[in-house]
Length: 34
Image (cartoon, rainbow, N blue to C red; front, side, top):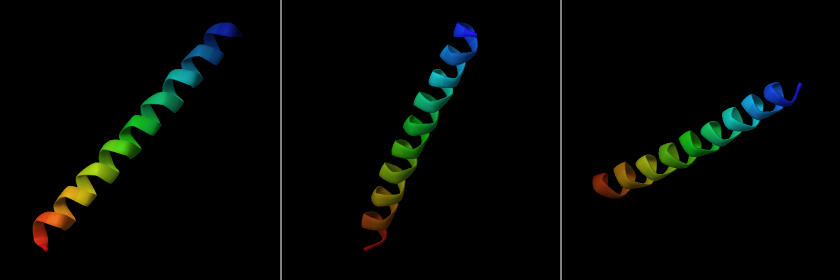
């Protein structure tokens, strides 16, 4: 059970990282257009 909890925590961290990268990329692209 602990292993499953660790895997879920890793997935949450990866998801947050992906969201942060997406937001940064979006802001960069938007500022590049303007």
